[in-house]
Image: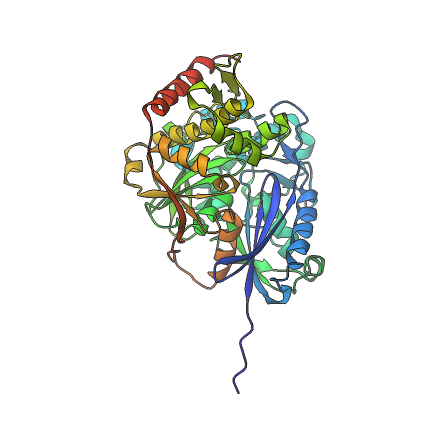
Length: 486
């Protein structure tokens, strides 16, 4: 009599900015999902911080909710993958205690430090894959050294957000190549920490974690966290990746020429490459992928779908209501909107630009305002696509992931603005959490293994109207006109 092999599931964890999301997967398909909200603190203008202790609380809440789903049996979960928001600086002392709130990816306080870092290492864009910008980790350490020297003197470890969560789960100081890539400390081509970049940014290389490929096992789930989560102890946990790279894994964007757009709090336009191809002049990120022997180019927009949630708060309605109103608006009476609520990274590298409406009339109604915000998100992706240059023309299509992928209107507008077919995948909202779970299934492979893209559930083909082309040109002119106003 043959014993029936037990079924297995993988747990994918994505530590986002606004929520911790967890998914239970089987055969690379999502069985159930859950999330727990996170809040962000802004104690001063331009600052963005989170208390890392909230991350574990949110993970516990989301996982317990997930395990209560009838489709999920916690005993079947046999591996875990991690994903998370990139660039955040979690500073720890020798005992592993957090020294201060985590400075997040959308924090702008270190602008002057970026200027100084560029002066110290003129070739940093070629070495680290992108010029210094306030969102990255290295200038944050420079800011702490200047403004909080007593804290800087106590640093023994620096971790990225998802790696701090990993430390709590498995106990090891580990990161992956893609999250390391977003620090400005990584020699991208060599995929190792750069002593030159660390020395120039008030950082000691011994503070930094061991770098693994995303499918390498970082450690095993410790008994204490396992009991709190409701899982078996000693489950292997893979290193995972930054949210951009794990999102790529979810849609098979691990091979050269495959790409996707991500519509989360931030936005990304991502194209995988087989080699390291820096383009720092246009603020296109050239980073190591989470899978071995792969890199990627990415335009990163700080605002993504965030303007939709901002407007929903202002109007006191849901994002779904905004999208419904936007669909009903008269396109020829819609004002222009600059969506730069927290400055912008790609392609402008402008931390000081802010949002603005232009063209408001006495007849402007809520529907027109909603349409202008949705349209502006599409226009930022058009700017991002242009920043890639001629090589973008060879990309056949782009998958869409993230919460914003729920909107057919937004996906069609992005297709029209970029000139690219947009495919919406099954499980599109799984995104980075799904990619993390897939990496966990690859934990025994030692070389780069192509991940097949999913089936497309919907397709949006470009149909730009002359009016949209003209509005895109005006949108770009509006940015140029307002960028000098501070």
